[in-house]
Length: 144
Image 1: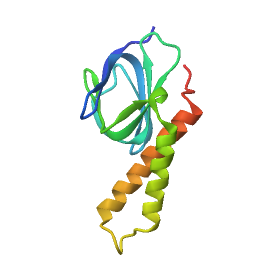
Image 2 (image 1 turned 90 degrees about the vertical axis):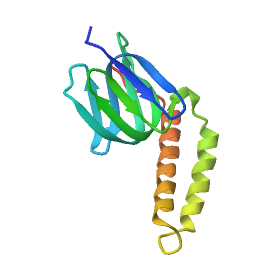
Image 3 (image 1 turned 180 degrees about the vertical axis):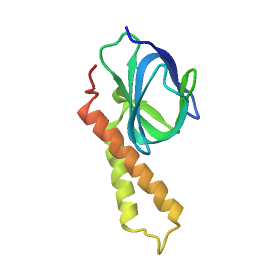
Image 4 (image 1 turned 45 degrees about the vertical axis):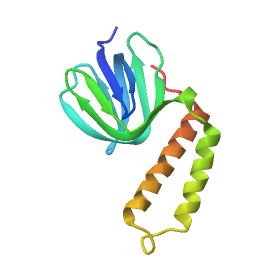
């Protein structure tokens, strides 16, 4: 059995996850990265994407959509994110509606008539909806 380490995933509203894991894979700003027990200290910014968790003794990964944030790798792993959602909790119809609303808004707004920060927030919201939809529709397919 591989070594395990405590992983905590914290959102502003709750402790989303806390358990021993063998590995966690997240999308950093540099691309997808995996972290395992014994990893050297690191603190990395996270992009919107899928978080893959291989729990202690498990053969398959659990998947959740996360809304960016950062991962702090020390004696334990802690992920701080604005939002996290398990694949089975994703409401695809809601995500599709939100995606359509954001796309429509982006079509009528640009940097000439809208604050740049509002456009960035809309682009991030669009990325979140696409990630949620892709994860829900394609499922968690990462194996050992």
